[in-house]
Every structure is written in structure tokens, then in C-alpha cells.
Length: 121
Image 1 (cartoon, rainbow, N blue to C red):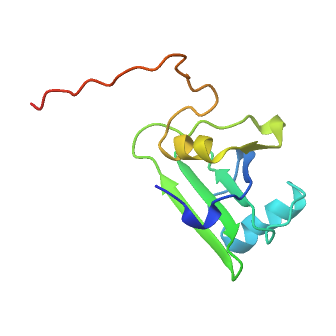
Image 2: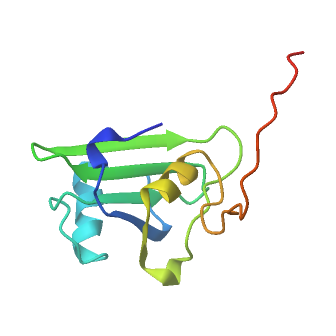
């Protein structure tokens, strides 16, 4: 999944668990009060529920607040601990997070490898 409106925007993960019953106004209030940020500043704010299988993302597109939600059918989203407050992630890390991949320590290849085609079964 690609969030086109957020290209170039700073992405913040709100550490710890968030009440996923909150909508636009409740999440914007968390951004202002707990994260000390402006929810209308063009940044993306991502929140995770207590069970870890649901996230919501809030961002301002210049005309209004937008809210995106995703629930994993299996697994949990990797998330910073509650005492971390909030952390900034790159667009690549956000993409991994949305796919359910551990974005904190991705492995980089040090040499070029040629991908071999797999046989269709």
C-alpha cells in the first residue's frame, strides 16, 4: 500500500498503545498534547492499538484531515516502546511497517546479487 499524499512528509510513530476507538479529533488531540506537534502541519502520525494488529495514520493533506487504518489478519505491527514517546521513520520504514515487516533492523546487502527466476509450480 502506498500513501501518495504523504510523499516527502515526516512520519511519526506514536509509541505505546493508543485507544483505536479514537477518530480524527481524538487522534489530533494526542498529536497536540502528547506528541507536542501540529496535526495540521503536513506530517503523518501513526498510532497502534493495544493488541498490535491495528494501526491508524492521521495526516493533513492541505484541505482536511485524512485517516487511514490497516488491520493485519496475522501477526502484529512492530512498534516502539511506550517510554520512547514518538519516533521518526523513513518512507521505506513506513512501507515495511505497513507490510508487517520489522522495520527496525532491515538487512542490507553489501554486494550485488542476481535474482534467479523461480520455477512456476
